[in-house]
Image 1 (cartoon, rainbow, N blue to C red):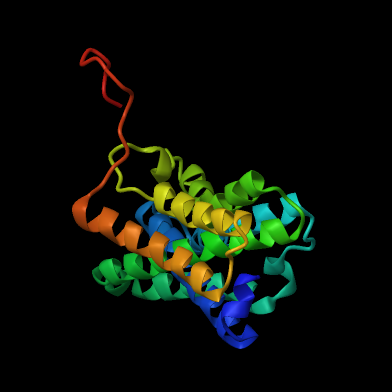
Image 2: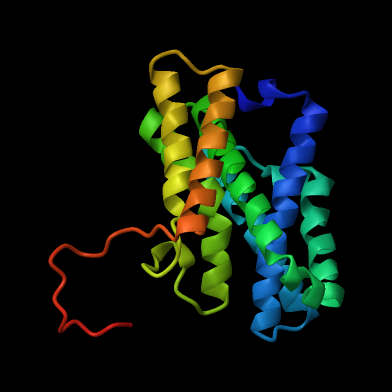
Length: 219
């Protein structure tokens, strides 16, 4: 059972474009904060929105990647970049709404990435790993290009990778026990989405090293 069977192809495509647009907004906003020019804003939007999916497609051999065969996927981040370029003060003011859509995209891409990887013959562990990469890969590339420690590696940031891992793991468990269907796929998306929202609301963070000594200097 593929995630695409949850909805009609047109609805699935619309959801993908919305997720790409929101991820692109986050990349473009970081570019503005870093004082990048218009080209840099566009690059950051493209990389953030499409980086994870391109990495997945290259690994599984789905080439050329969907980002280069569907014009809508490629153009959408550029539109987001233009929106941020001209209206970034207004976009900053609705940052909380952007984060909610970002959480939804995280869950959707974690699940769709996992199912697509499995459909190309990868085992369950590798499929879950690529589901995670699909969801967070663009954000990692964004932070690296901005010369920052990736957010998902920082202890002082709310859980981000963990919700994606939970969503991807739910999918592979359903596959393992022959329970993957539209309902369970949707449940995996919602679970990752809600977990990310709760992490933002209550500032849940991953633990640092056990018995960490106070003499270790904070970075």
